[in-house]
Length: 500
Image (tube, rainbow, N blue to C red; front, side, top):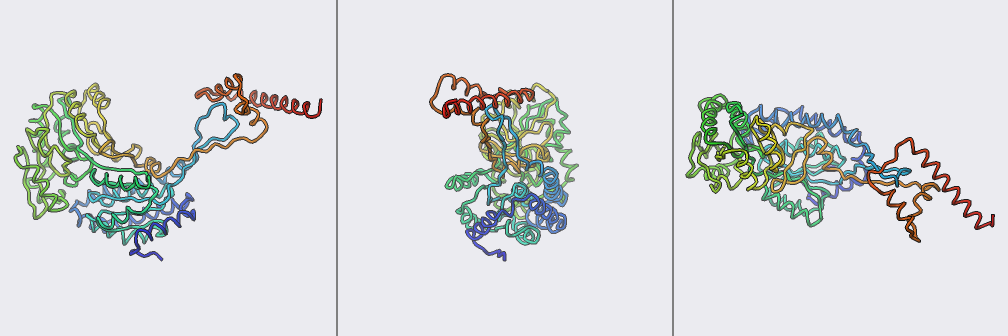
């Protein structure tokens, strides 16, 4: 019987016994669990909305679209393709293996740890879990303790839908997480800050545990005069204000010319009024900052800043209005860390070349946004910068494309997921060579054995040359040749043995 007060060693041991029993490996079992997870989401929409509201005061629409529906679509996409993804792959081979079977099996890693984040407490915990289940792993889910209502929901409801022999939710803060990381997992998936990501990576290194780290960083936006500034302002400010800016791929700062800066600020006034009315604080569609401590951190970034729009702060209600800053210098405090709030600094640049140099002078971002109708400039930015993902003429929306990998690069993370990439993340690709033991196969490969000769070397180098394939119409000739060689070999052996 499952107990929710078990220690990390007990939990991991239980799950390892389950995995070693082979219970999670049949595709039918995985499908059943994914459908149970789907049912949990559909049957608990209101409790989920309430939990996320309690944690973040997020609007109902944002919770349904960006937490619940995203997960439902991810499950649907996975169920559509899981049988296809699970089939052994048949890679190309050299002539040396023309008589052999060469294939790649998809093995689950075993017992994996998925550590979620507080800003999208349901999505960022369960999205990786979908891939882990589909791949056949046992899973420990660790929701963020900074979103306690959602964490409690998962801890109480998940066992009602998922097989507790294979999937567990473990709650707690820093002490509990520290104890959990002492255990030996077969894979660790973490979403959160770069600072904590380094701690996770160091812990995983003790056992050489592979990891995926979904971190963050300062995601830039480039805007030039070819774009429709009003439409760009709507898309940029939506990406910045959704979840009150507490989104890992939110636009962090804007790069544009002085001329565009003025147009953007004027357009932003109109856009923010359309979004939230005259007072965003009273709008039911505008969220709040996680905690007073985070509000204090963000307010510190505004000290001495040139505020063009917004700047209102209410620590007691954890409110910061949508804010745009002008005359920002690269050395200002607001440019030294990921903002993770509704503050948008503007850095002025003359052109795409300047933007490229500025972006490349900083750590690689999780996302990059380009607003331009100049094809050459878009291609130049794409070719000469590095980012986890890119959206051109919009923000955040690349996250919704299930066929695209999502992940960071450099300090913004390592590894990726979503769709098949989630399945691949939690799967070890095991290469298999099944050699032919017959006389023909042995005869064709016998030149590898000593004594070595120049002729054997020439023959083997030819067989092992990549890209040198044999058309199917010639396969029968090779087989016939093999029979001929085998016949000559056997007759030679018999003549020596019996004096034919």
